[in-house]
Amino acid sequence: MTKNIGTIDRIFRLVLGIVLLAAPFVSGMAVFQSGTATIISVIVGLIMLGTATLKFCPLYRIFGIQTCKI
Image: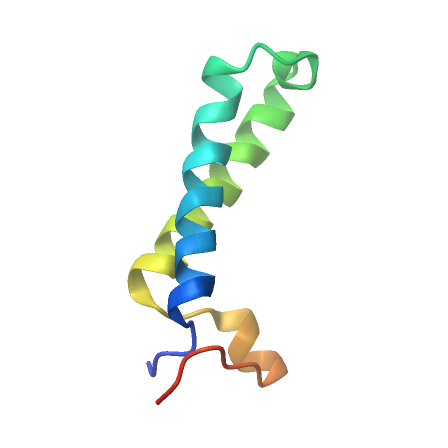
């Protein structure tokens, strides 16, 4: 697994992942009243945090995108 996520992309994914994980529990938004929206938000947040931690995105590999400088 080679790195394909750069620093700016990684920071963006970390922030977005944290926001998506916290939003259903602290925002009080009506969209999160259904369980489906909460589950989707948590899953996407975990994926964002995971890809940022591993510095690898499988979709980037499929589409040939690379935001890191090697």
